[in-house]
Image 1: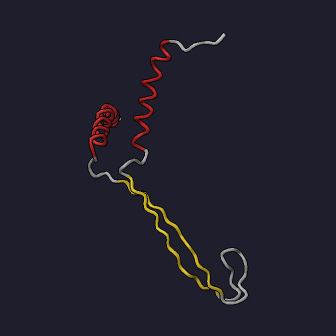
Image 2 (image 1 turned 120 degrees about the horizontal axis):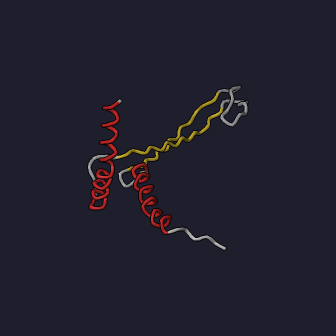
Image 3 (image 1 turned 90 degrees about the vertical axis):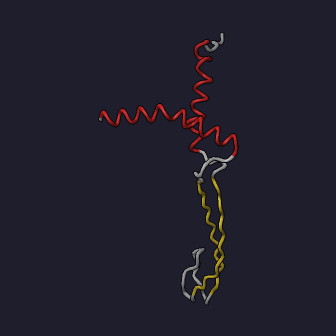
Length: 110
């Protein structure tokens, strides 16, 4: 016989899921994050007898093209963009307020 979740379990599931999403959301890169990828290619000259990047020894002077790719993620924290972004930011600040106050009180006590 299958056991069904109790009413209390179902009543707690939605608020716990909402709290988990609200706590995880600020850590995710959102619309304010900008991802930049920069690719640079340069020619490197290896003299005879030196070791090439693939581990082989150059028998004569060799030129190898080396490509490097750099990805940078920058977060913008200057204001909010759009109605949804501003609303989310205000809601998050309201949710954080009691925790900041509690942290301040604990910091004063300790």
